[in-house]
Length: 281
Ligand code: NAD
Image (cartoon, rainbow, N blue to C red; front, side, top):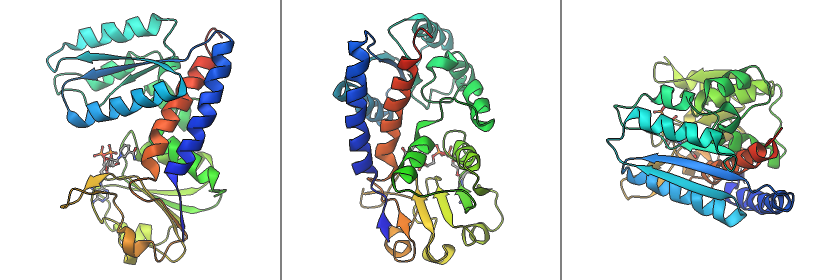
């Protein structure tokens, strides 16, 4: 069994990104990222701080628009429209979730698709499903980059994606289908989850349930990608896979933490650089 080490790969990618940013700066372009952060959700604040710190490390200019919980939808959209027009901003990210009185779809839909570095705008979602160049969501994109780093080819593999959200499961499905995997996608209403996972050469799980994937649900030598992030009863961060037992049976596995998580921010940086390169074109 081999560990897919997202921490190591993401560090390497950040070093590469830093070099690219230096080159862009010498050509007169400083990549810029604007983050919209609404409310006081502690997890959202932690994620935004991590994103901002990584931007700083690689030399990307970043600004965070912090807004109170009771802000109006119009005010958020106005700020996004300002960022759409701002020539120093290449990427715009709205930290989710938004408070319940805000229409998430309308807010995301107001981002210029060319600055949509999270890949959540319907235009980028459509382009991804058509296999066109686009901004793909950072978490599944990070998974793809990790697989590439370990020379894992998806063509012809039987894949099972567990979890079908718009930000994890569905884009994961599209990305691997574009690489010619044969894909089963499962969700809360799937009748017999293990009948799907047992057949798979590679399992991607992003649900948010501790020990959802157990040893008996996995075939020998399968590749396991654990996207889930949970806190167990001892306060430790764990994924959706029973790592201790499944790791004895599989060929590759991502640990949690240190697997998919660090790749997500690395892809946000890559998407922002990609947007900056398109500036003026
Ligand atoms: P979500 O709640 O939006 O979606 C969960 C999905 O899992 C749904 O499609 C649901 O139908 C499915 N599901 C729920 N229970 C199930 C079950 N028993 N069997 C099969 N499917 C089931 O969640 P999300 O935003 O997609 O996040 C999923 C997980 O991924 C969470 O743990 C989250 O913390 C993690 N996540 C990690 C990263 C990262 O950077 N590693 C990024 C985003 C999300």
